[in-house]
Length: 135
Picture 1 (tube, rainbow, N blue to C red):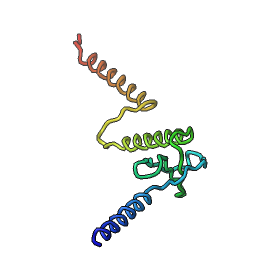
Picture 2: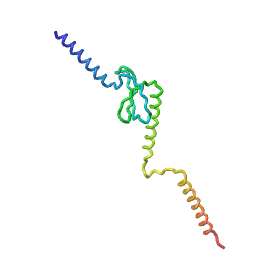
Picture 3: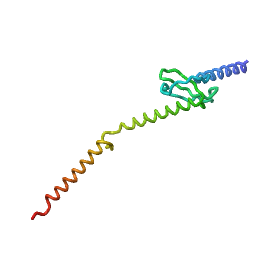
Picture 4: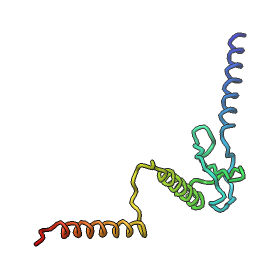
């Protein structure tokens, strides 16, 4: 009697755990829906350890979920675009550097500094010629 009760409890527990783990799987089937990469906000990879199969779970800007085959050209293209987008955002965040850090500029600012250095040299030459020996 106790053995059957323990066995039944164990069966119910394992069934419940499988249902909980399966509920973490967003994709039950792969979709053939294709949207432009600009409409995709983020992606995650659904592994086949807990879930039935491996898939890429895309979340759109509007919150919709699209499940794609990880080997499809479209999925690879979208992942590549999203990675490039995050690299650009990371680079922009790095550009917000401390104010006391001197950055080199190109274009007009660089030319102005060059002219200023030339003026300094001319002033130095003028001072040397003015303070030179007089007869």
